[in-house]
Image 1 (cartoon, rainbow, N blue to C red):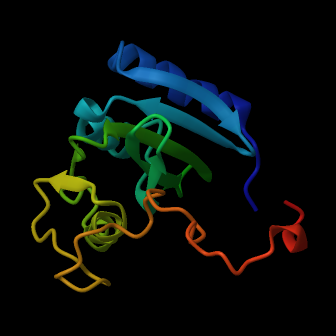
Image 2: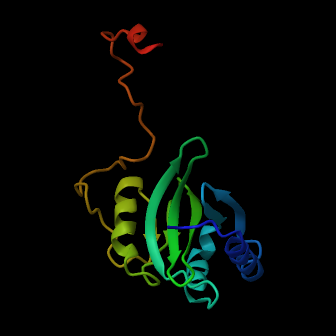
Length: 169
């Protein structure tokens, strides 16, 4: 069972602020987890620091997934890290413009990120620079769209046979 550890959260924020001054955009507690938003340019350095710093030791990449903010024209990546030594987990987020969806790979830090970055590319179109084999993993190669982006309406707007009063509209 994970416990909220405010002193551990503060240690992480302090160490990152001291070592990556100006690269941390935001830090907050979301639910039961510290969430830190950082610039994409330093993602590799921050991840390497979080893994190798003796007091932190976030040695396990639990999750890597994409996100889409259509109103801001941004794509992003969320990383969940776990420290087995300290029994603590954190969330790291970074964003990039949808017009230039490039984020450095972290496969050199955690080889297990390979498949997760490929899946994120496949569904969101985020290009992980330096990835050893970035290609579609679940969708067909000929597909030109990215299915988890929120770019298409959920309903067919041209239908004339639907009765919106049945749906509370």
